[in-house]
Image (cartoon, rainbow, N blue to C red; front, top):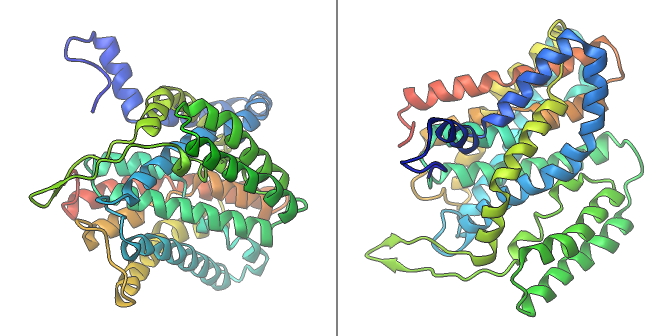
Length: 383
């Protein structure tokens, strides 16, 4: 569904196209690349000012909208409703981390660069924002590949944060502080729902803020603050099945939340891309190619192989999701970007190797081109 109406002006149509396709995210990333390579000093200052607001606050609402997509998909009638189906993308996320990490270690071993081993977790990442953008361009609205990828990416991100905390601690991780704030947040959201509170702002300002504070204080990324809160927002479910066809599941409060945040989140994505994508183009080396190949090649291999294994174990792919589509979304998941940049910063000290690692994370954008081409070759484009 597009934002512009048939009678809209050309300018409104262009704006609607940009917003509907999350192109502000791309524009932000391109602006960062240009500025960082023309005037690195002034870009670093500007990015530093925006980084916390974009990454730790603004992206809360992007992840919340992604969580809403997954939640809808897991309701009765949704493509991930059955535990047997939901288990597949979760297991695929594991495969999509293990295979790239193994491939990376194999590459640096072949290069005789054991000093690069600490970067093994960098290609484990899947950037949910850019992967979601490319998936929307490849698959039609409502295709099961989109919620499958979202659930896979969220699971990947969650496991990635655990890897970051365990293997690359930047500070003290406090399980006590995390539980002390996150548990009351979930309980408060449940109480609000039980009391019949339908205004989504109550869930954002109350449980959402507590959850954000808990993740931040506990050493985990606060951008996932609303992920455990979204499923607890009130929703009116009409799961009607007529002649075997699933009808739309209507979610009252969640729909209000989505409609309000749809455009502001696009602005957040612009700032997010701008604050994170400024990487010197001259920084290319062995670790660059090791990261890029591990992401673009290792991700689809791991996701496809684990999806096949999950079915052997009794799990079930979502209805309508072919193995050809799994290959394409596996390639799409090879876009590492944000979390990959986080891992790079944690894995290597400032210097040439770190810059090369960041460039590898950025060049994983090439997976988008490969995915778009594979979608057409394998005939899953808009199918």
